[in-house]
Image (cartoon, rainbow, N blue to C red; front, side, top):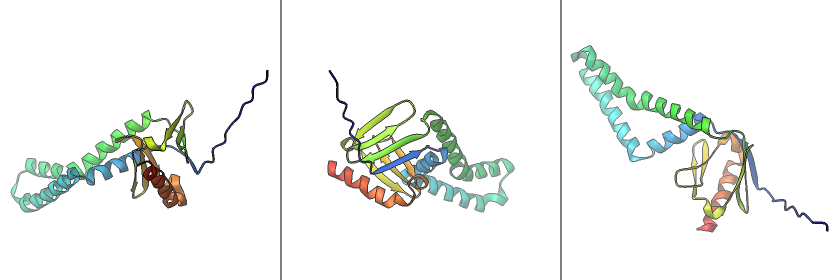
Length: 169
């Protein structure tokens, strides 16, 4: 008895091979921080530290000067550096050279070790940031597609994914 194998070839609308970089995750984290109330507080604190440093610089000892400089650097240098180190650690845990494709059935992710298919109804949202598009598979996890990966297709791709997500709502 012969068995018949039917292979359905999906018509891929968009297909990308990409590697998540520490810089892309860092950029995403910084957008998240400075697009929230935490970022507003960080900015106010930094401005206050600059003003305090300018006002009291000539009147204070070296210990206070070091504290003032550290206060200025806290959210302008130290926090971004720590966020970048955390992003580097996260990238080491993410499978590299993933192939991700999008069609009318959903999102399809393929790594050297496994494949995963997500239907559009499971996608939580999409966000367009300068330099990237993020497709959320959960409230806090998703796929970061940079402008380098998307190329000239960025706007058309964003509209396509957004339309698929909107149909599910």
